[in-house]
Amino acid sequence: MFVFKSFSVAMKLNQIFWCVLLSTVLFVAFYSYPENSSHKVTSSSRVSSTQKVSRNLTKSKKLFGTELSRLYPVPTRVLHNGRLLYNRVPKCGSSVLAWTLKRLSKTQKFKCMFQVERDLPTKLTLPEQANFTQTFNLLPEFTVYIRHLNFLDFESFNSSNPIYINIIRDPVERAVTTYYYRRFGFAKQSGINQWQKQSLSDELLHMSLEDCVNKKVIKNCLPEDRTMLAYFCGHELQCRRLGPYALQKAKLNVMKHFHVVGLLEDMKNTLKVFEALLPRYFQGVQDVYLTSPDINGTKTHSRVDPPEYIKTRIREYLQPEVEFYEFVRQRFYQQLEKLTRLKLVQ
Image 1: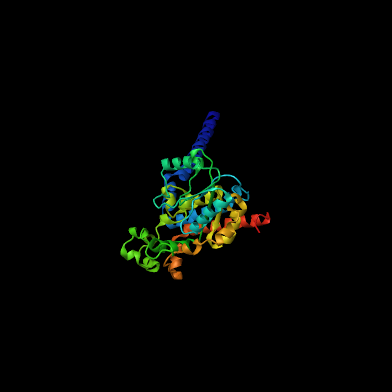
Image 2: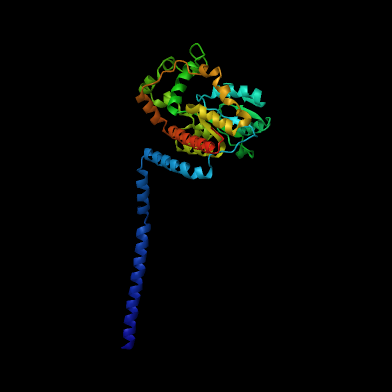
């Protein structure tokens, strides 16, 4: 009798054990079943590309607007030594500033290399980047090198970066100016820009920007590889595309490597910051710049201001560039405020 009861208890315990084991197996299987993970993938795949871009830009704004500003605070250090590289962005007042530096080089006793050759590329291959880095480092210590050139990180070639500076402007205004400059050049020229028009058909050559945007795909009127982002992003293919990668990397490079990025719309304060932080090159720049005979001559010939609805469409198309401009604008005024508190700028 006792043996029978013991056997009965053992059977019940055995049943309980297997029930618990089976429940555990079912629980694990339910929550790790591939269908659940595949469902997640399917849901994710339904997100549109527009939503993905929007999410990336929002993430970019948060990252580069907060964390990087703490990692790389705006420069307030006055530099007296080092070569200066002005990788100038086209149609941002760079010609006038370049000629101003050319004049200052005579009084400030520094070498000014103003590269205006039209066949010089803005994008370099890796061997060309390495060669440029070596050649640049052979220049005299007090040299200003001016050229349309995408940002080049000298540190990737085991070398110290030069002092980077630049100037940008509102992307929409720059796009309008670029469109007409490709056709007619500077105001000091008498007619159609013979060099620029070679790549344009007669129809496109004489078409207004408003008609171009209305009749054609907007990227055919405003090629994305001519935007400002590449000049701060670098030489990769993705840097010449209007997208999150170019935007994020351009912001990062500005924070890490550019001593000053000024604004064409506020040239007065831009010159003040240049002179305060880089007196070896910019001492007296305000007087020289304002009396420059090139200011009026470098305005774009036959520029037609498009209506607001066209500007709105352009602004939407250039959204990553617009965000970059606002980012740099905020950085510049933070820099100006700090320099004013330090009494380096009045």
